[in-house]
Length: 497
Image (cartoon, rainbow, N blue to C red):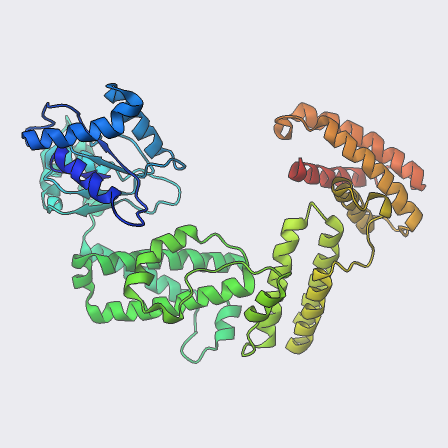
C-alpha cells in the first residue's frame, strides 16, 4: 500500500508506476472521488480535481459507472486475494482504518500521520500471513519519531492500552540496535549448525553434514532468515550505520559462502525444492550488493533422463561420492513422480538404491558407488526392469498401475513364485479393479466415506476371487494382506482419478 499526501498525488503515483517499463506492480487508486475533500489537508485545486476526474473516467466508469463503492469493494477484494491481479493500493486516508488484508506486506508512507491514525496505519501490514515474516513500513516523513507520543496518548483505561505491560510495548518497537542484534543472532545460528567446522573443513565435509533432510531444511530456513535480515540491514540507513561497513562486509562474505553451500547441497540432495519465497526475499541482496559473477540465482531441476544436463551437472573435479549422490537424488526425484503410475519401476529402483547405499555405507568405496549409480541411471533411462508388465495390459496405463500396486505387496508378503501364468491372472483381475474404481470415482469421491466403503467391498470380493484363481488360500494368518493391497490400490486411485 502507498499512502499519499493528497488524492491528486495518489493519481500521480498511479500514473508513474503504471508507466514504468517491465513493471511488476499492478496498482489501483482507492480514494473519495469527486470534488469533496478527503481530510483537511487535501488538495482541491481545479488541477487536482481534473486529475481525479480523469482517473475516474478511465478506470472506474467503464466497469462500474458512478458506483464508486462497488469499484472500491472490487479492487479491495482482488487485492486481498493472493491469486488476484491487483498487488498495490494507492490511498490518501481511505483504508487506513478498518481495512484487514493479511496479504499486505509493505506500507509506503508519504504523508504525515499522528496519534490514532499512525497506530491504525501501522496495523495495516502487521497481520499474520503464510510466508510473511514481518510487515515493512517505508517512512518518508519520519513518522516513527511520533510513535512513542501516539502510544503514550492512548495509555489510559478507555483505550485499553494501559492493560499491557510497558516492557511488552517497548519490545514491540524495534530500532536499529534491535535489528543489529537479530542479525548477529541469525549469523550465529547458522554457524552453530556446523560445530567444529573452520577454514580447513573440506567442501565435501560441509555438504555431507547436511545429508540429513531435517537438518538440511533447518539450514535452508536459517539461511533464509539470515538473508532477509542482512537484506534489511543493507537497505536501511539507520541499521547500516549501527552495524558498520566492516561488519556488514563480513556478513556478506559469510552469506556468499552459505549460499554456495546451499546450491551445492540442493544439487546433491534436493533436485526439487520450492525456493520462490527464499529467492524473493534475497533478490535485492544478490542483485544490488553481492558481486554475483559466480553465484547461480536460479536452480533448475535436472532430469535423470537428460543425459546432456546430467553430464554438465557431474563436474569432473568433484569426488565420485558427490557425483553418485547427485545421480541418486535425480533417480529418487523421478521415482516420486511415477510411484502411482509405474509401481513396478518404483519398487525395483527404490530397492536397488537402498541396496547400493547399504553397500557404500559398509565399504565407503566411492568409485564402486559411482559406477553402480551410473549403471542404475542407464537402466532407468532405458526402462530396464527384471520383470515387465504382462503384454495383455501393456497399453493400459490405469490397469498397469493397479497391477503394480497388487504385485508389489505380493512380492513382499507371499512366499511362492509369481510365474508368468500367475501374473497374467493378476493382470485380468487388475482390469476388474480398474473398472470398479472407474465406476465409483465420480465427482468429489475422494473425501466421500460412503463411496470409499463401497469401493472397499468391491475390492474385497475381487481380491478373494483373484486369490482363488491363483490357488492361494486366504486365512486368519494372512488376511491383513488384503488390507495392505487395498490401501495401495486406493493410493493409486486417489492419485490417478
